Length: 164
Image (cartoon, rainbow, N blue to C red; front, side, top):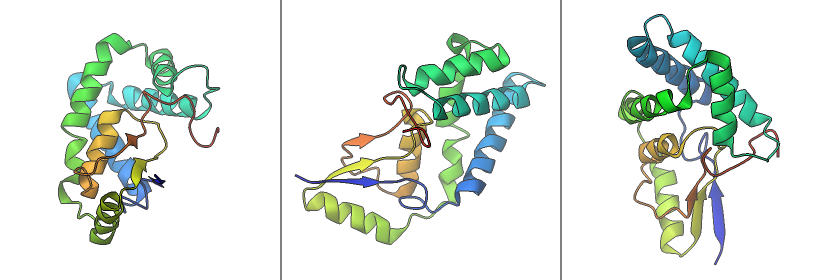
């Protein structure tokens, strides 16, 4: 059986990576500003520190652990107190980013055709966010009904681009 890897940005999703990142950070800031008035920017900055740390991960720990260690160090908030809020963000404000997105019908058709032909399919995006975030993005792409063998995320990987 053959396996085909799909990138998210520019392949499954044609959202415009920079516009998507900007919208995500804006929504994240607004979400956390409501929870912690005056601290939204501090939290978003700490998220950025976590992402940069994952990009330098030496492979000894999961990206998830590297992220949370950097996040805690950057802002002082603890994972135990913040993780459920981040999951809430990804289920709500983040999920709504895709409300107006129109999936690429040709890409959807291709993915479904390859699945029907028996190929194993993997979403191999840079594992810098939790599974819940990438599952939302797969939903936006219109391929959430596909039996993906794997959708990469920070929970299950210990490196990220550009650090192989």
